[in-house]
Length: 266
Image (cartoon, rainbow, N blue to C red; front, side):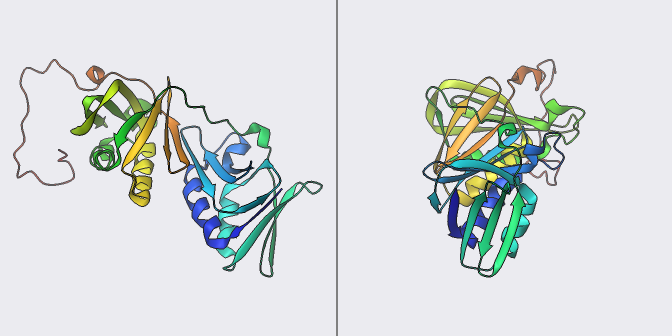
């Protein structure tokens, strides 16, 4: 099993996928990056809340998969000289040799069997316009709570119904709601509570990638969004908008257009 690529291609792929590497994983494999060769090279990482998978522009020889320590692999890639880079599996030593110019590194592999599988997509996806999705995330996700003691409030309620997409977030002190009109209707209604961290990462990837449309597969507790051969996967619990925005208030609240400041979100 061998991969030949360039230092910049390897580093670019690692900088994307490493954002899903778990910093405090109970399972050792979650602190690593899974490298898979099956006709092409792909990198994958997950912390069980957010999962990222990217392709690597490389020449490959053989097939198989290994898990390498994620943060150490990124540090090694940063230190490599510009030019060709090769990653070769040494089965007897149970490590990967990374070669670039006169530099040689050997990284011990982690148990690949412990690395979680990503879910398979089933059925037809819903197509969402990328730019409105990114803009809505950037406006609403900032109101989500960061208190892990109340995990449901760390998410953003995403509802797509017909030609409308609504996102709702609250930390119990402030509430952000934004409804966006879509150019085309979505045939099936979607509703899920998605971790705000995952949505912020998705918005960043949309900004970098420049896609016009994203395909969304929503299962019972997960959402999958492939983009140009890459995959963003995250936990997505179903939730009800009526449980987020109370309907018992006798009087509506209005704000003047002159409202300014971080607490004002429209």
